[in-house]
Image (cartoon, rainbow, N blue to C red):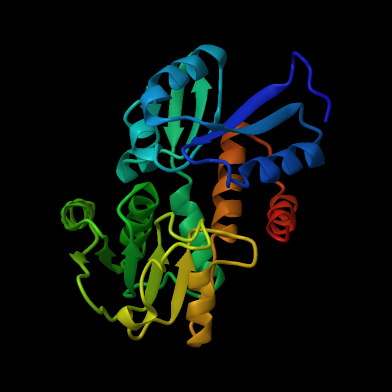
Length: 274
């Protein structure tokens, strides 16, 4: 890839962000389509976020957002899509007329990843572990699919606040304090990024679970995915969610251009074999 003064720069921001495979996925898409663009990961702390976003607006920037910045970016963009406002978190941004526009493609990513293995049916009971931006996207997906939602967090106050917010957007939500019978379990925390992380939830605490989605991805898949499969539970890590939300974001960055999903999926698979 030859970079020139005309090359368009796109970024994924977060803290941490070194684990992100968005650069590998998007750069593969750019090469496949012959686009003069490059995508990089930038560590941006919460303290430096305001200055970074001002620079993006001034230079026509675009990109994606990961933990822990999604909610702060949603509150900082000049305009936002309806789904971004509904989630209260932004994972995709671009510039129009000198102003940043925010969107949330995580909802589409979560829902599509669940559908890939037969989840997402009306009336299911979902458990979401976590209360951040990805958990909020999961709650919106649950509301759209008519699911009942349980939330688990190490912070009781955050769990209660999340349950109240999710109920307010139209999904029946309760806090899961102990073992909770559910159909689908979703890890929306960063637990699993490091090999020594504890499991997001003990399999014994989700009796009856049939399917599980770990939004974290890792080479060889995560410990939680392996623990679930050992119990005969269908489970997947976050690579398909990454591809689906990334493809939707790509089509925001390049309106009228279809994202090459198979190329993006292959790039993620290659990276996760390392």
